[in-house]
Length: 551
Ligand code: OOB
Image (cartoon, rainbow, N blue to C red; front, side):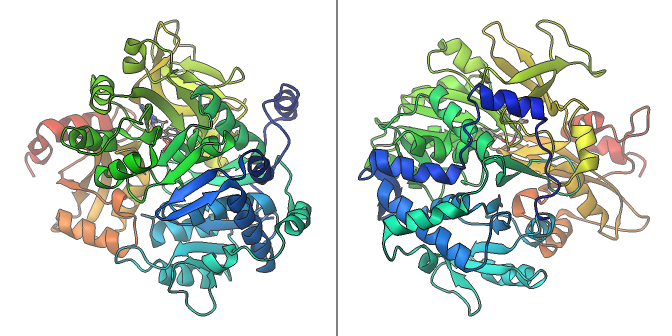
């Protein structure tokens, strides 16, 4: 079975989440018509010149859903999706929810290395891509990957090769919408089934995916939107790639649609693009990562665009530099809300009525009464009141394991189902968390997570490399960048351009490609013989020559 390998919540947890109303027992796709009935003539989605009302959205969703069934896609199938932010992506996502097909949400930056793995892991029946983006031919890559497994290719754009289906044609509204709505009911999936797969930042050699169910993800978005006080006046600008949990469902575009708000798609988070949209559409709220927010602050100083409609910017995904929340609020003349979340589940927000010092210095608190958390020391014992430690969590929207990763799940989850976040937090007197550090082995490059072991494995494929270790070097613009440290085989040479060329040739997403290379004589080890990354990072950022002394 295509979905074997999901890790269900234990029966007693399911019982509680249903009985206490966290889970509503309806598939996500069902809500599309609730929304249309509530706000049919209001604009739901704006994308360039396209403005879809809630009714039109529902009709497109059903039309596409029925056509996907016509293509042979069925409840229980998985599809790989790689699309830019656009209305067709929203329609596709929701159409999948109508018929029980689960999208695996890849990033536009992903290439053969990532997409090949995801297609295989989720055993996908179709691959959905734009024809091309910039100078990259997504359709050609999708065709190669699809041929390996007999999957269909669905293409967004004007250039659709023969044998491939056109996403726009499939989404066209034809025939009687009411009749189709009734016909579509027979395809409704079970609410406990997988609705979507989110990609984990991950700390393993191969990317992990997280199966999110209809029940869990609907609650994720609904409860987030309540906490963030979304309503029908919310105009939500989707700046970050909508394949991410943050702009998708935290509260994201789903949270905005649930409350009758308006979703505005931005093709890029750059202020040159977004400021005009904010003025034109009177945007009230938007999710940002610190690296993007920094650019907004700089651009706000000189912009002529009217940003006065902004009420709240939400900021999360990586550590916020000290004092920056206040700078951001001042520059954009709006409220800032910090968001500490993860694709694995748990979401924390500062509340809109938290006092300024709490908003500025904490990363918020959990959204749900049913979120459980523990803060533990290295031995897994409670860290004690006010002490920092690793955050473990369980709850109604935090799955109990990664998809098809039993070995990794033994490390990433405790036997009784707590997810080890790999983040070191402390509880602030306000009750909110402060994220102090990270113990998981990844690089957080402007909110994009890069697994260190994944990059190390790729580096080890280079014939010159004897040992490899990746560390996050601090960076003013992005927070962190990928630094690769290597020990070479005797008599070999390697420079950064070689590494970048080789990674590129292997079809690795650009954001994972090392931006700094240190060739060292040896890697420092901990007493038990693991690479001492703390020490390595310290030396790399202070005086990397120490590591080549005597070489
Ligand atoms: C969000 O999700 P992911 O899955 O890309 O990354 C999760 C990890 C966290 O475990 C933490 O290490 C880091 O990203 N992180 C933060 C943070 N928010 C996330 N670190 C410090 N401060 C923050 N505010 O990044 C994500 C998902 C939903 C909403 C917001 C962010």
